[in-house]
Image 1: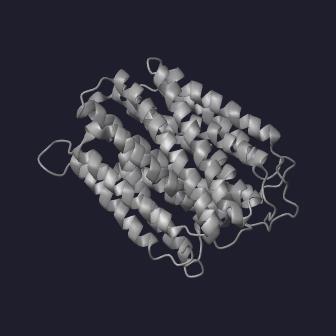
Image 2 (image 1 turned 120 degrees about the vertical axis):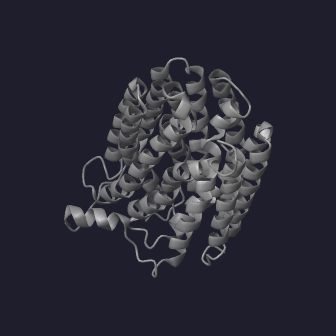
Image 3 (image 1 turned 90 degrees about the horizontal axis):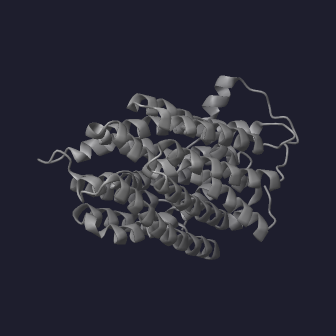
Length: 407
């Protein structure tokens, strides 16, 4: 593990890599898939979206730790991480050009599953660089790079998607291609260190099983952090995933207006997220306090969900508050994962497992949402959906409060 402070150049280049990956990968989940499924099957768009996101997130959940474990053990002149970032990004970009050609929800499920499966190779390897390069005292700075870079990439991707909404293949393909080009800039610049000693050879099945295993008794705070973060992000995913349909169903907006407003919302929430990300990362590193930031973010998220459920017309204010909560939570939670993981030598594996707590909510939220939407006499009850999101986020905050190492 590196103990030398990282340079400003490395920080900026690492953030740039996340700009590229998030531009390509995250933008479709925020607006592209919602709009495309609404075009294919408008009568069942909510259930169709739940199916697409649920299956895709399940594959991400399965594949991310395996990719992280494989990159930990990879030997080659390119280094441990670069091959996974390159080939994962390349295959994911190609799949995003194919996805909009699908004419059925089932076809979109298959295409999005491929995107999730291969792009997670790049995501797992990119996250693992945190434990390779950043010293423990600067893990908050690593989170700033992830958060700011990811925020910029998300806004750019959504903006491009909105501008190209009338041509589905361009709506998905252009952000993916530009994002991959940006990732290539980082890959050409980054000097990945090859593994010096061959790892102990183990069977494929053992490698797969080991990718998901850790001893809860030896690392209880790591387990609690996974659990608390899991609940908080279910709440966040419910808020962000279904706001497109709130605008179309409750506010009566057209697809074009929804697409343009989504861009505005993510510009606003992205800006507030980056501000919170930077402040939380700097202060958490300076004072070595992490728990309060995560709990406070979860409670702010719960309040925002409650407000938006009753007053969808306040979506701009909700975007600001949700951005602040998401920026602080993502930054500090990511740093906390790297500080509570059982060891630093297998950072790809542990951060892969940590990413499960961030990816699994993408699968659980679409499964929980139909239950919450069906509460009451209305056919689609968005108030109960967002109140449910608030309660789930508060449960996550309660779990985080029990972690001792982060206080």
